[in-house]
Amino acid sequence: MNGTVYLVGAGPGDPELLTLRALKLLKHADAVICDRLVGADILGFINPRAQFHDVGKMSGNCQHQQDDINHLLLELAQSHRRVVRLKGGDPFIFGRGGEELLFLAQHGIPVEVVPGITAASGCAAAVGIPLTHRGVAASVRFITGHLQENAGLTLDWRSLADPTCTLVFYMAVANAPAIVEALIRHGRAPDTPAALIHAGTMAGQDHAVAPLWQISALIDAFKPPTLLVIGDVVQLYARRDAADTRPDMPAQAGAPSRPPLPCSPEFA
Ligand code: SAH
Image (cartoon, rainbow, N blue to C red; front, side):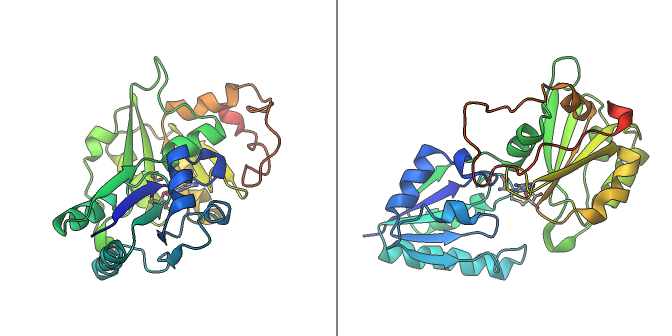
């Protein structure tokens, strides 16, 4: 009798952003396979008797590494009742959750997907950037800045020049200069505000804001996990109330350690 695999989103980092379903599954898991982006605070919720596998070092874009993870999931599902595959953010947003779901389905393993707060939502909320805003941004696009096997970025650049669309690039640290250059070349205004957000909702959260044409110059100070957000909505973050957004809550481990940096003068 096969067990069930739960593809669980752990959210962007702050353990308080875990769903109740995710928390319940972690506490009752018989086996857990975990990714690099899941923080220690969240790992602390895992049933101490569960068999634990950290595949963080294995994860990446190599297909053979993903094949190893798929086969580990299958083996565990054949020997355990509740197998939790824990992933940063949401399993279906740049998380390879779809590949694991298809593989397991082909082998007759029941799968349940538990959504998580994706980095775009978590980071934008943590910094105070609304991803859409009436009269400013009518849509938002989540885009990978890193393609399989480091293939060139073949995106529909002209559609990304639409000034009413907020762009959120995941995994963009290495390719940020190429992304910025292509966007400007295809018509996105060079003075469009942009933000780099590192470790959003985590203890080491940091961010910087600059016009698009200048953002590449700041990238060296940012290591993964970092998101690149581009669009006129970025300038709105300066207008929010500077007061604590959760005044009723005590300070949490894993919450941002300091308030956002003041924004650059040109966006004040
Ligand atoms: N499934 C995840 C994304 C995995 S891809 C999700 O839904 O969020 C990994 C990329 O996500 C990182 O390179 C980074 O661009 C982004 N990311 C994930 N967590 C982040 C965080 N806390 N802060 C900033 N970027 C993050």
